[in-house]
Amino acid sequence: MTHNHVRKMARDFLILIHVSSAFLTLGFPIIVFCEAIMLRNEVAINVLTIRRFNFFKKKSNILGRVTYLMPITGTALIAVSQLQSDLIWLYIAVACWVVSALILELILFKNWTSIAKFINDYSQEFLEVANQTTPFGSNLYAKSNLSESNLSESNLGDRVKLKRESLSQDSLNALKLKINLIIVATIVETGLLFTVLYLMVRQP
Image (tube, rainbow, N blue to C red; front, side, top):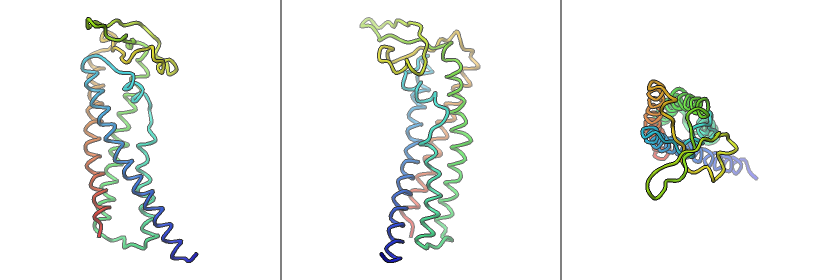
């Protein structure tokens, strides 16, 4: 196997990893945006679904940090392919990625951690399991300890109710603000990552 063949195989492998990480990175803020919109709507009507509870109660997300594979594999790809590193599109792409990474860490993950802490700290105080809605449209709520083990049980129903009396208006406003910041952050980050992908595809 010649040196050129090894270089080509390495280049193809790095391209695969680089492009895969780019699409995973782009998919993450889109997913979070959808979940945050639904969380905001649920909080507005004083209800939280089990899915949203489980999604936001985690204080970290490995998928979101796949984004750091992009500059690593990109740098290796430039070295293997012997591309010119002074191309303007490359600087723009790197700048967009840096801004998106800062938004990810300083806004999105920071507020996500705050929401997770909020949910975990107050879950025992203001969450009640909602039984399924009756044909007459009324809901019956039964108290339950929402531990990580019993949340997965199907008999808990699909919804939990936020007990308004256990929360101050300031706490609810702070929660809504964090959710809105996550929504804005995901929109900006998605735009930046689309720009990065466009520059990757349209590069000379």
